[in-house]
Amino acid sequence: MAVRMCPHCKTEITAPEAAARSNDIECPKCGTRLEVAPGSRTISTLAGLAAGTIAWRLSTGSTSDLGGVLPTLYAFLAFGIVSPLVLMVTANLRNAPAVLAPEPAHASSPAGHGGGGLDAGHH
Ligand SMILES: [Zn+2]
Image (cartoon, rainbow, N blue to C red; front, side, top):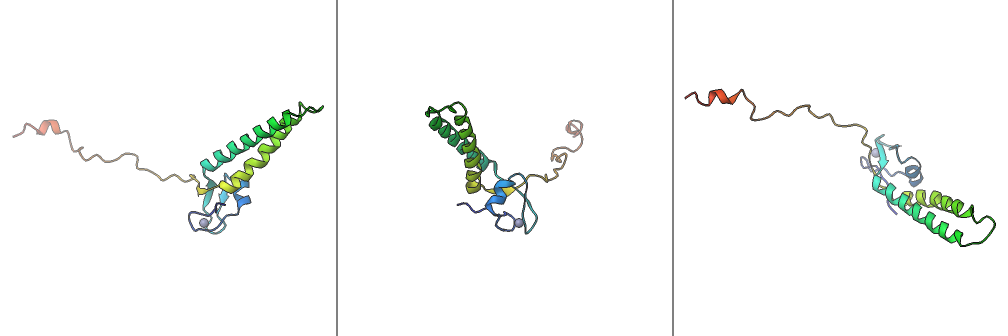
């Protein structure tokens, strides 16, 4: 099981906390804003879809009166249960990209000193 912790101060973040608030987690110790890395969310979504597909296929085989409704229901439930579980297990935290570092608007070019063309033939 992966350990979720603040990349800043190494404080451990509980799994339910990370899964429930994957977009906006705040480190309880240093207050750094964190988020679940996108890769983990993709994995959990894919796992949820896979579970939903399996549940749908299994329940489609049954020939009951509710045959038309249950597969969808099972698939929905499977996705809703499996996806957050996988997210809790696989989630990695990273710093949320909320604060962008201010970049200098223009870099000073080393070659730029006057219009060099006129001075060239001045000899
Ligand atoms: Zn922290």
